[in-house]
Length: 435
Image (cartoon, rainbow, N blue to C red; front, side):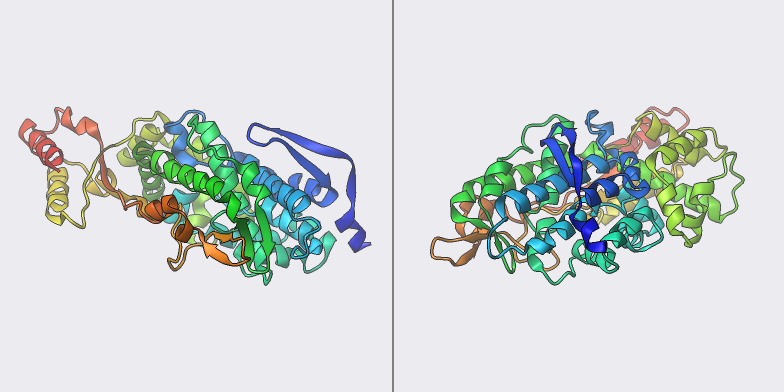
């Protein structure tokens, strides 16, 4: 009975109309049941690109449609490209489809900023949702008692079949192939697009992971260049980073106020367990970006001046300005600015903020560097494998070459605030302009 559920097909195929892949096809009962779970539906309320919608107004897409897209890419690979090849174990099909669909299950609202402040880990919560008392776990256990653990292992990259893991997590995995195209589509830019169909056609299964036929190298070069441009133009965009800075400091301020027993007009009930460090799985699942945005609007009326101001900035998009200052290379300039801000009655803890691209959760192509994902290998005509940058001059030229970008963010209105002495304002402005 358990085995029949794993093989059950829907009486009629379900399709999702998708702007990136045209259609997403669901034929397996297990996949359809997972999509309908409470925990997967929650991903509709988590934006894929966090604060980027404040820069590129179309970037309102969610982790829900990204997760479906990753599933669809993997489905096409295993059903159309790998099927019948001796290196591919067909019994792993349902496992890799489930892992593809559920790989982002544990992401919280505004994931990066939220994790920084509350020291949560979306990978930990993905595992908890897969293995805990959840609707997702109930569906997976209908396949087999050990099936939830296997799905978790694939997502955690500890599953013994490296080929299965590489479809979800490598330098040319389904996750990246979907989000690059999806993020490009919703931000309205052209450079995130590449020939995914060609790349999938030249993928070949091997015991140690997916390899690319040598004849497909140019399509992979295009993918790497698209990725490079997306990081520079979208993921590292300084205004999006400004929004993230403001968001980060809203959460930081709320955490401080709660610790000091500040009497909130609107008690942050959904956040209390996060402040106290005793978050339950139910607490985590219940919190989404809709709730956070509602509280930001409530807190626009709080008595605490810093919290009120930061929330108004985020909700109404009155973000910080920035300057190209690296406090590690110019510590005396940064220290002087901090002193001047204090003299002006502005708390530099919240209003003079250093941020760098090394703090962002994106990974461009860096072959051979410890801690990065497995590099891309080309399958040569003689059957040997060669790492991509050894064969491609284009990839060699840009691999790992994105330098860390440092910026310091501050409120531009301080230059026109007449409550601050004009001489002090001019001194701050001159120091910033000289950086």
